[in-house]
Length: 306
Ligand code: ZN
Image 1 (cartoon, rainbow, N blue to C red):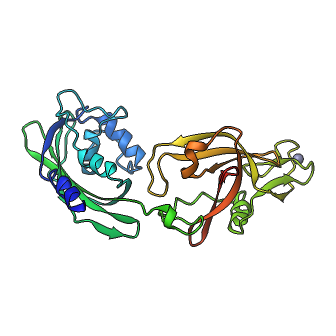
Image 2 (cartoon, rainbow, N blue to C red; image 1 turned 120 degrees about the horizontal axis):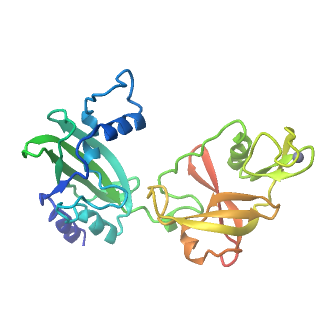
Image 3 (cartoon, rainbow, N blue to C red; image 1 turned 60 degrees about the horizontal axis):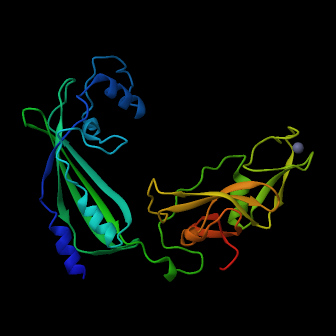
């Protein structure tokens, strides 16, 4: 079974797809936007630009609609990924990216690219699950066909370890990004570490508020205390998040707007396994996952039928 899959994966190695054409000629507008976005304006804040060599892959990006520019080879250069997804290797981790540059590009020229899979590893066991390391190789050419650069992208595509084999609410998925914490929200996350869901309550008028903030939204008092929620409520609304696909979450990842019985609403993850049974008004209760050694995260699960 694994041998057959490996043979199928390796049938993609060395198949060169391209040329894929850049949507735009190298131009000063995109260069300036890129430099602003990555904050590399520095003291060179004046045209004419030297095209940053590290911007090379940008010229071949397909854009928000995912379409290659007209005239491009339309074969799917990521077809190997579909094979892996079909077989349950849904997790993805970037491991490293190497770029080589032959020369600086100049405004006005149009770049093309070819894509191939350079390497597929044997099936490896990793702490995230079993999977394959794949190296994608991309060559960039100018209009005369001369090589201007190459990029190698290595990824691990893996089958996340089955949650049902884990203990209780602990999961073997990699830890999710930690929420931002500040002086206003620290009490909430400190409470979560103790498996308590704390709601901010105005000391002057008793009004409950969430998310936390420095002042009462009703009477503007700066004095507050906390109320420990029973952690029970109803789903006021929810969404299934498909993008971005993050290794720490099963996709689609349900996130709820939960109305606690105390009266405030909060945004929190719901259980991925329960996503097909979620409904507006459904009763839920808070549980506290421990995705990392120093970190707990509240999420909600359905109270009926669990
Ligand atoms: Zn108040």
